[in-house]
Length: 112
Length: 111
Image 1 (cartoon, rainbow over the protein chains, first blue to last red):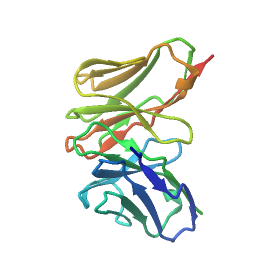
Image 2: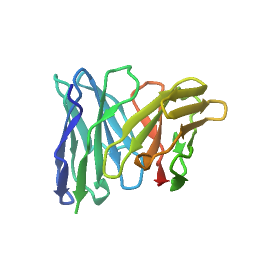
Image 3: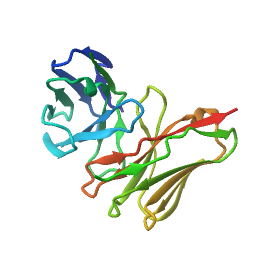
Image 4: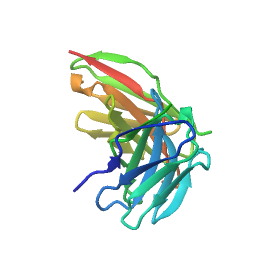
């Protein structure tokens, strides 16, 4: 059984650019959630995808968008990057209705 | 704004002692509660979840829930240096599609 994998592990972008982060969910999991974790803080919910549709969204602007594919993998897209977008982006997968999530190792995004 | 509050620490305990980590939450309707451990530079790892008032034990870990006081705690018995990490409390919403995390408590277990 493979875990949740994210790519890339690290990324440096310039303010105003766009970025795409990728996540492969754990085998058997049909739900993917994305979280943003700023340094020294707890993760904040961005959105969740279930059956290729958005299934809940946190307090993030529309320039944060996502996709889920038929194989349950997912992408997080961020447009018009700002310095405050620098954070660890975590993908978590689960089977809908299950207890808790399995997190991937994260993508460290630095915006300069 | 639903909130989850934790003391940021650091909480320092000697090896072999009991570490007690606490968390309060604002949404009285919350039904699911989770404890995650996060080592520096790593992603969160689920330790335990609890849904009902009272205690739930798993090995050296005990989660305690008091919904009337809106309080969740995690006890770690026989603390080991390898337990040194940040412990995140998370509360699930009623739709089951979102976790609200506290800021985490940094635990240091000294040999």
